[in-house]
Length: 213
Image (cartoon, rainbow, N blue to C red):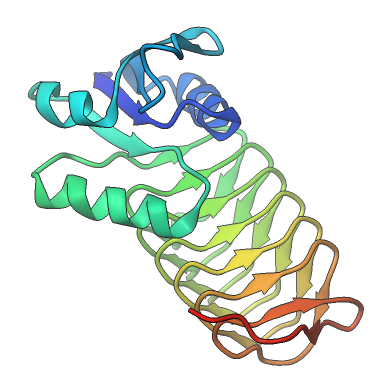
């Protein structure tokens, strides 16, 4: 049985991916987009943009679910927390051609894209993204807002802190602890723990000068 409408905040390229995953999941009878660039922005791919984020907050109906389709982790989490505080029901969007273990835990507001794999006893927090063909292996723990970019791979028992960005095509070895606010560069091979707010790049990955929170 289908749910009500899915109200998606954010009509960028990432929003199109969310819409496509939600359409494939076929759990909602209508997808409706909201973006603060409305009314200049009128559509997101084949779906209409009908108002701003404030419109979504005012006009949701009983049975609707909401989703934040914004790639920037801090912004995504702030908006999700605001929606939760306002009593909105938050959706989780999982593409049917991903593989998610029944023994995994997926937080609300999380997106799992086609080709991704989330293995047994992995735990994903609020508003995570496991993007195209990324893998999260057994016993990994992803805090709120983590983005595992396309083609990135976390080996077993990796812990990742709040808002960390695991860059496209990167690899994280088993058992490592990755801090909060970390940026792992594209194609990096991480073989050591990474402290909070570091940017690491290379093979093996090494930190760049520290960033401020």
